[in-house]
Structures are given as C-alpha cells and as structure tokens.
Length: 234
Image (tube, rainbow, N blue to C red):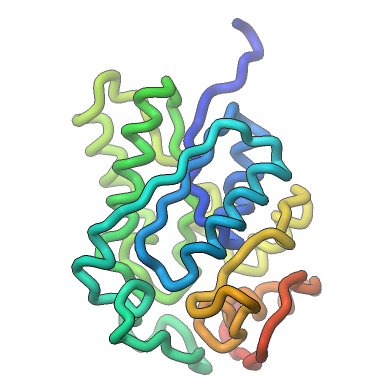
C-alpha cells in the first residue's frame, strides 16, 4: 500500500542515545522495540525506562529478553560484581578500552534484533551506537556495522535487513539537541552504570551525559547524587 511506513526493530536500552534513536525510528517507521537485559547492575531501572519510553511514544509491539552469557562470563564492570565501576576521569577515551566494556555485546544484541526483524518482516534494525561516545568501545565503530550488514546479507532469508545507526557520527551534545528538537522523552531515560535510585553522577556514562546537556545549554531532567565537572569534548 502506498504511503505505508517500513517496519523496523529498535534496540532500546533506555539510555539517552537509544531514546533519541527510537524517537527517530517511531517517526519514520512502524517501530517495534527490543530490550535485552544481560545481568547489568541497573537492569531493573533500565527496564522501567524501556517501558516508559515505549508508553510515551506509543510503541505497542515490544519484546524483553534476557541474555545469560554476560553474567556467566564476567569480565566487565557492568556484569561482574568483583569489578568496580570506575569513577569518571577528566578525559574519556584516551586510556584504552575501559572495564565497563561488555565483550562483543552489540553482536549478541544485533543478532537477536535481526532474528526478530525476520519474523516481523522488518527491513531496518536501529541501534543508538555513537562512535564519539566515547569510552572507546570497539563495537560502536562504523566499520563494525558495515561488516555486520554484510553478515546479515549473507545469512538471512531475504538479505534485505539493514542496520541503521543514525547517531553514530554525532557528538553527545548534538544528540541532546536532536532529542530536544524531536521531543524525545529524556525524563524517562536512565544512563547511570552503577545506581538505580538516582544517577551517581561520577561514572563515565553520567559524566558524558551531564557534559552533553551542559554543552547543549539544556537542563538534564534526571536527579544526580553528585556531579563531576568534565573537560570531555562533547
């Protein structure tokens, strides 16, 4: 039917970037939202964010699944209770890949999203990956998604599903500005790596978010236990 929107699956963690990404997807496609819990410290709070964002945007088709691999293998401060979540540094992305990196996580997420897309007849999979994000995670690089699209073309029934990364080249402040223009529900999001009651304000994710809102000249709607002044370029 002419004018019918294409179908998409959106990976929605409940964080700032994925919130802007799903807002774009809901505007341009018939979006279904996928949330994957993986034993992360803020699992319950992120699920609440997912539900709230979907409700606000009117996304009815949604799926929550759990990946048991990451808590089983450990190796990341987000999934291994024996590894502390580090407090924010003055500079981010200049000291190698941090301990908050979850090994090859996005490959697992994308595989689930592509599988669901095949079932739904969706031709797009949105993910809010940001290269400038930049704790320096290797699975947030453009080359990674180009390679994954080749895997999808070779390994799916029709080969017509594409991973879409609309935010990947943007700075964090640009993402905040875009989200504000779109009316993205930032008040429902959760970015903190370590707490579920109120954002810690001292982990890298909190610091990047606070710096982004500051650079955008906007007020972050979330409450923080503390705030670290950052020199990070966003």
